[in-house]
Length: 170
Image 1 (cartoon, helix red, strand yellow):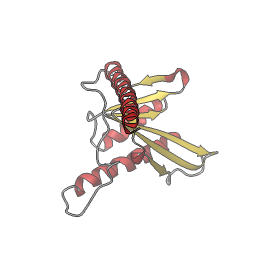
Image 2 (tube, one colour):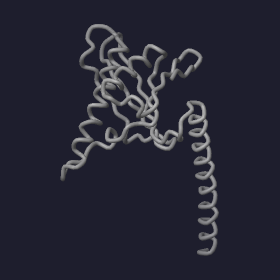
Image 3 (cartoon, one colour):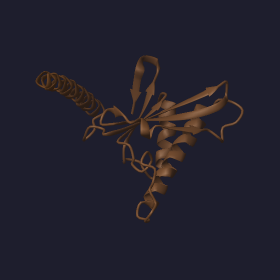
């Protein structure tokens, strides 16, 4: 009985290992395709995606979704309640606010990293390799303006994903 349980466990482990290897290969392949498609020097290890949502111009929020090595890192997901856009839905201004808050937190984390006893939020302490905003050329240009304001131009690739035809702008 013990021998049979050990055989079953070994077989299950072997099956799981094959699945993990296949998943890792699929993730690596996807990241390589992104690298080639965006002409990056290396595959993007950290990808941050941003989207704005609202209820008829109220309760505006921005979401930050994070992938590391092609795997969603839900511990790093963040939501920003948009405070400075009042009255009507303005996705551009909302994206500006969300990205500015994100990069202020990165800057703050850089300031605190050498202070004993301070532990910066890991979701903000690293910059992405690839930042994707939901929207077309307009959203992309606004995101690039915020990146430039923080002196981060050239530190990572910024892209806009337009829902129409799933077009990716860089």
